[in-house]
Image (cartoon, rainbow, N blue to C red; front, side, top):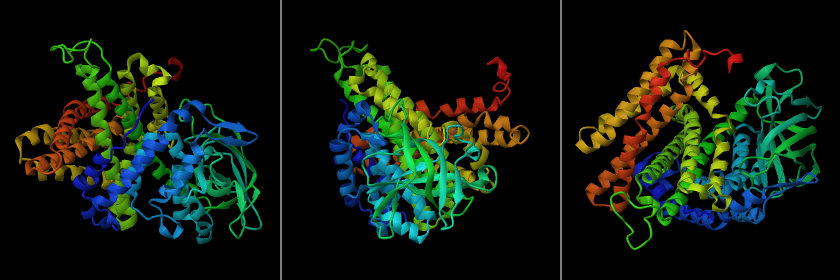
Length: 593
């Protein structure tokens, strides 16, 4: 059975040595001293390894079952959910007035990575609740907040998001779910939603569904969509639960992965709903939840990659196969361990350099969310809005690739279920699809985010990279060669791609959109390159000063050099593809495929 060890040391390095959170001048960050964050991360790591990870395989093999309209979760899930609730983990970064602990989002993100890496399907129940609660917090009335948030923050009640219908996914303007106004101000919701994660289960007393629907007589298309709170059980004025609402799980989806999470077909038959936010402004309210969810899904890509990598390392060190070409390294044994072989090392370095770079990227992004939400920084809000499709799309694409590489190290055993590696690959696959498929993320990045606010935020990103290069170049020849020059070259590739879009996209939008996936990956590589340069500089300074764990910092530098030399040059390939335009992409008539 696979194992999982929480990367608390690496997280502490990022939070305190690289990001320097206590010096960030973000409200609440002054309390995040190293000992304090260390205690929280260590405890979360223990729960992840001892409680959640052992249930990961059980959840995968048992799955969820639907019995007379009730979904039963896998053995042990309910008890583990109670343990997570008792620890206050679901409300770690939620407001104190609703029962949360008001910790910064960056700390919740670090804990979320551990929970997701140890058991993604399980963690989705509380993660979706967090997103739904955030939407109510941002757009709900005082009465709605007081009614729902205390129970949701505690996860006594869980939450969902209901967007997709059988005939429409991304194009939500086509939805058919209707909302009929009632005399008391409520609405009757009728329609069917599919792919609803945690739509029905046995781990909470109530489920609060956030449902997109069209009010009868409203505008056509996406402009007519509103968001509604639809509880599974009605809530009485005193907060107790009343009658069952007109919402039910019609079926459980049979999925490739995340078997421990109940993915439901939800039927709304005149269910009572309450408008959340303004009429016909449902997408605005839903995107509060969607943007948080997209960052969380990007984190899932990292989490599954790291869990798979950890087990691949163990296997590569233990499995004896062949001899090192430079001479036996295990002369007393019948063969050398796999890890002596260069191609195995290449694969492990791909995985290690990605996961550590991605972790830095995610936590950096989380600090921007804190800076925007806690400090009211509009520039930080604009930058994280720009980077959200990169975080979601690039990290889940690459995260899936890394789980495949980890599986490959096991050879035939990687394809056999008892070794557990296929689960990481299967669970990681959904992250490329839900919360906006990655092709849509790329289109959003190129078609909308680059031009947002007149291109202000992408220019700010380029200026940030240029400033880092200017401030850190010329101090050390080796650092310049290994980190500064590769970052400079990759950044120039990204700018050249942006210039190509500006010069050609207006004449023919297909020229821009045909290169959107390549651009998203270019952007992701540059972000990880920037993170690796920052991490490497921190470790180099620590070694020069003789402080900290020398082996840790030497390893960090070696891993960073690998990424800059072997992964970051992919930006040149992506630029070449982008500059070929759309002609070859669009050459065939549909009938000729």
